[in-house]
Amino acid sequence: MARFWLSLLLAVSLLAPSLADGKRKYGIHGHKAPKLNVGTWFNLPKGKKSIDLPELRGKVVYLLFFQSWCPACHSHGLPRMKKLVREYEKKDVVFLVIQTVFEGYAVNTPAKAEATRKQFGLDIPVGHDGGPERSRVMRRYRTGGTPWVVVIDKEGIVRFDDYFLANPAARKLLDRLGKEQHSENI
Image (tube, rainbow, N blue to C red; front, top):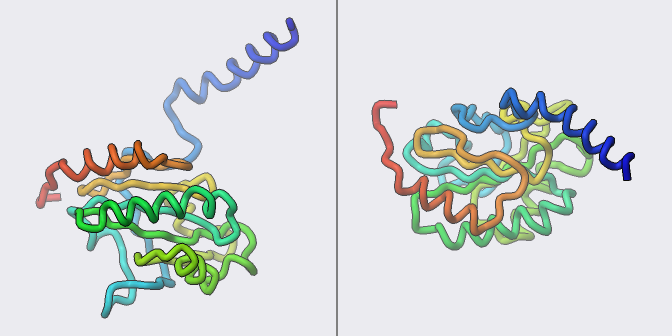
């Protein structure tokens, strides 16, 4: 029993400095959302070749980063998002899914991103960012893997970024951000 308490004390003492300084290893919560700059998109609105955040200013944006071979993306991330898309289709919320490849480059291809979109019946834009070593979007957003959710407010500020966002919490956040006023001067 003494060994357990000693181990716990050691773990807490090692974690405490990183928690105390407020720095997070992953994510950019509270910062301006970087441009996406995704080169490959599927299911864009007619006449569009790409989509990026500056043109979405004034809307709440819900991003889901995934990989086609990610089990948690298939069991949680994509099904949760699909439900939210249906619930918020008439509201000022934009949903985007981006395959952010950081491993399995031969498997997580643009074609697999589109196949995953069809598999889940997602009628929203789906992008593919498979940089040569690690997705550029992942680096800019400092994501910790997949599935990773980022919610951006109307002003372009990241208000949530982490693994899973359960739908009750997502609804609460999306509803609150939807009610916030958008400043045209920003």
